[in-house]
Image (cartoon, rainbow, N blue to C red; front, side, top):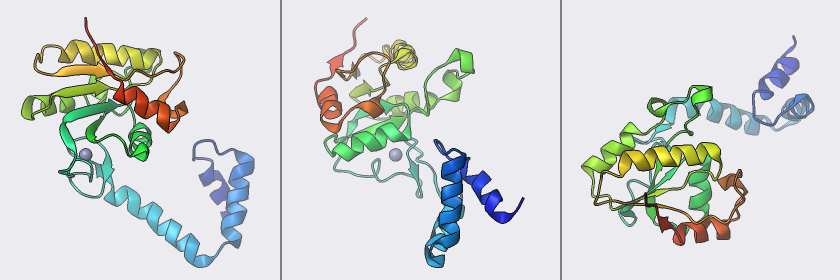
Length: 198
Ligand SMILES: [Zn+2]
């Protein structure tokens, strides 16, 4: 395999990149500005070295604690629980949520062997036990896996009587995901959240 073919194969590792796109990327790199390619290449090798999950919320950061968790102007008593980093970024992009986050790193799925111990659930419980948290917003995806995970978390956390557990009132067809929501619907769903009761 020559270098261009190898590069093409390497690009196929990226999500949504098939053979044709991978080939286009490979030829693009061959023709591109040397400086830009070197910049990309150094970022790619640096990122796995320097980025790790925030010790508090799981958000990828170069520091021990991410910029959201270390921002004192935010409301640290309100924790919004999301499945993935993408969900956090999407909510942050609205610029309207002033609480903090907790990234689970996925959802429960016994069929895929994803159990509570595979998600950042223990660290969420530790946060609740150690900090002055008043509200947990369960903002998991409105589909079966998200619902199953929400129910599990509610059952786990309901014993903390001084904490309000809520979920966004997301006006989205069941079976969908947070990624399909526009910013307005998303932040409205979070603002108009409702308490989960048994
Ligand atoms: Zn953090």
